[in-house]
Length: 362
Image (cartoon, rainbow, N blue to C red; front, side):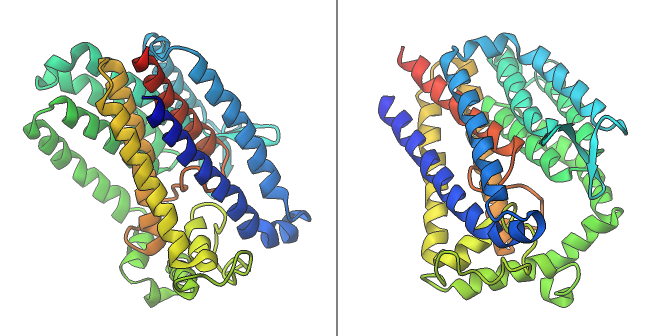
């Protein structure tokens, strides 16, 4: 599978390169105004890339089966971190959310590590007891209970988007492993009222839903971000206004270099640039799926499956939010958006996927 590894690595490198260019373009004016240095976010992003590159090489150098032995301890550790980050004075709060540990000049977000830890645990569980996954108490319930604990801790931060993402990945893994439709439907029926309550009874989430349905109804309020995103995409046309010539990044579009960086790509590089990014993610999912299909080891199969779904879903959700197809979730675009923990652990996920391919060849 050397060819698959090469193509996967090349796709990710191209996405990262696009991210570096667009982060500098999208954040330069804001960084100069707020930080006094137009390259402030670019420099930090490059540092995060270096950290991610070192960690990626680390996971590629070790046989991925080692992580199977540490799947349960890692998950328990992550649960502890998710609980500790909620404690005032220990977890860093920003804009009403307490999701980070303050590590000097950097912030560490344990929910990003939780995504990998939950996938590893689920892959380990399915590789050992996959033939019992159709049985509720022995093959379905244990994973769901641990998933529930992780999701509750993440929702408390609050971060409903990440909780739903993790839950979706695990449920798809269970479905592929052979979980019964009746169990999945029953779980969905039980959780829908909870999700409804978390959305309808929380004012800022309800405003996001209202803005999603009609962002132009309150284009200066709740719908401001979505309406500005659509203006950016629409004004780019087919070929774009030109690299670095975005108007929306001039303090019109919030989170221009993070969650809505695709909108700036659409404005500056046009429809062709946007489609190129989407095509790269489609190629990543396709090549990742080919690696998973050719993996005979059960743990590697389910681990690779979870990692491909994780990156693919994040990309689909971010793109959907940018074009107005989904409500705002706060999930970055993998490998392209500015970010610390998310970028690093997405790179680690790719390193694990490449490791699975390499070990399969051996």
